[in-house]
Amino acid sequence: MDPDTFRSDIGADIYWRRRMAALVGVLVVVAVVAWACSSTSGPQDAREKGTSAAEKDAPDPLLAILPTVTVIPSPSVSPPISPSVSPIPEPRESKAAPRPRRPGEACTSPQLVLSMEGQGTVYPPGIRPRFILTLVNVGKVMCTTDVGPRTMEVRITSGDDRVWSSSDCVSGETENIRKLDRGIPYVRELVWDRRRSGNDCTADRTAARPGTYVAVVHAPGLRSRKAVFHLR
Image (cartoon, rainbow, N blue to C red):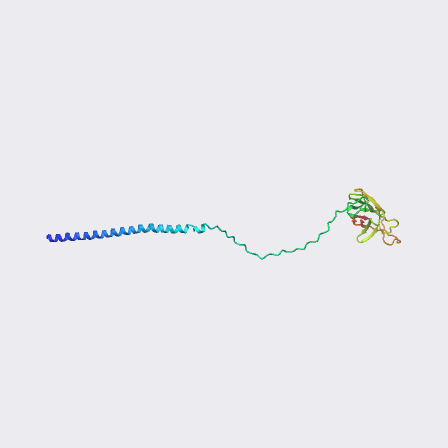
């Protein structure tokens, strides 16, 4: 081999090695500079960001010394409601308690119980119907009442036909005032002669026909239960 040729090859190789070394050195310097810049700017940016966040979070010293004011929302204002005016009722007269009844005063209908019972339900020809009248004072004290034939009337009917009444053709004294003690009944027996009666006391009284009849006793404000019976 030619020695000159060998030397030229060695020189070219050294040349390229030097060039590569220089290039690597430049790259290393660039990398170091870039690293230095990034490390310097990074913490600074972080610090700047942290400072900004802290500045944002930190309260304003001026606001800190001011008193806290709570704003209460005002209620919605409604138009005033005019109160309804009701008429003042006139004072009523107080009802006084009823005066206690005195013994011997006239009986009132709430104090009395009136009843009548027949002595039978079927009466053969010639047998007169008999009834028992009872009047009882259920009040607290003794009272007086009229038990005469006009005031305490016994009436016998057959359907709508008024057959007989104890108040028809009564002569003489008709009033009969009796004292009624509490709980002690006044009892009277009544016998019907089976003949009709009416306003004409001079006319002949005709006999009642066989059939069904009803007897009831009446008094002012009082009426007994019906007593039903049959005439044969």
